[in-house]
Image (cartoon, rainbow, N blue to C red):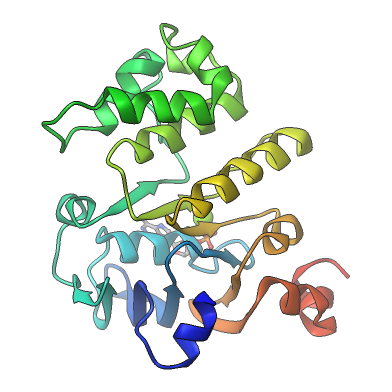
Length: 244
Ligand SMILES: Nc1ncnc2c1ncn2[C@@H]1O[C@H](COP(=O)(O)OP(=O)(O)O)[C@@H](O)[C@H]1O
Ligand SMILES: [Mg+2]
């Protein structure tokens, strides 16, 4: 239903159109376009160095764009800072340094709620409900947790601002297949509450399984865009990007 409304011309919830930009003078993004509808899971895959993390930074406002435009809920946010985008409903879990390791789990979640001045306890309980293993370790330093649990803390921290769009850069990096499946299940659960997900994944096959829309990014540009299922079924995509 979501993608229907998109094809009927209604604007997607997140729309990042024709992004061009990079570091210094060199462009990394070469006209990259990403859209996500309400409650949809969008997955970006592609080779190392393709610009996936750069695209996420651009959507979040950490990278100035030379061309292109980002809208959220129909509002042009291209000129806004990351902090302003958080206030508009974006949450971002970067690929690295996404927790404060010496602070407790609970302090990490409190830090996540930095823009809020209302009572955050209910949201915190929701995060603990979503990630029970993390709840048990709420008084422990986050850096002492397992890799999978640290990723859960990072996702939980981003949920503390009650985002409408949750952006995740390789949330399953370095975790076991079981922990990966579990994390994907939790991400599906989050999407079912109406939150849109924009996620970069190295575990391309598994991530495309749960993707409403998938993007194969190569050299900063969209190479393939389709439903996750269609990309998984495409012989060319399989051969070139999914290892056969
Ligand atoms: N902070 C940076 N400064 C300069 N170049 C960078 C920086 N971050 C990434 N790059 C370069 O941008 C390109 C894309 O990187 P990245 O977006 O991290 O790719 P991916 O996430 O797809 O692996 C690479 O060539 C990388 O070396
Ligand atoms: Mg990356």
